[in-house]
Amino acid sequence: MAIEASEISRVSALVGDLARRDVSGLSHGDLMEAHDAVARLGRLAGTLEARFSGEIARR
Image (cartoon, rainbow, N blue to C red; front, side, top):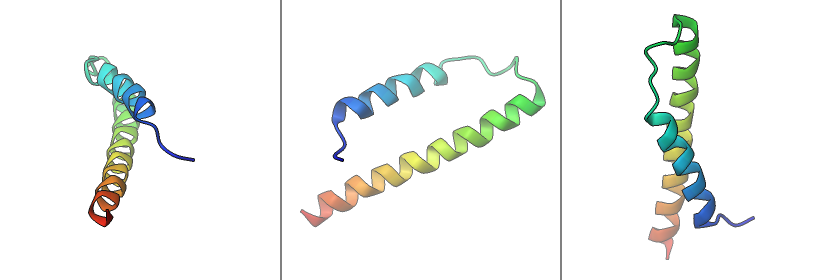
């Protein structure tokens, strides 16, 4: 299944919305849980970028 730019744009908009939200009200446990999820999201974004970079280099 091919990736479409519209899918990436949709996810980017969702992440942008999350990035603008306040995290100061989270409990310590919720903050740590969300931080773990954000770290995973960052790794996945890096993996996706690497996949695109590799394909661009290949072409």
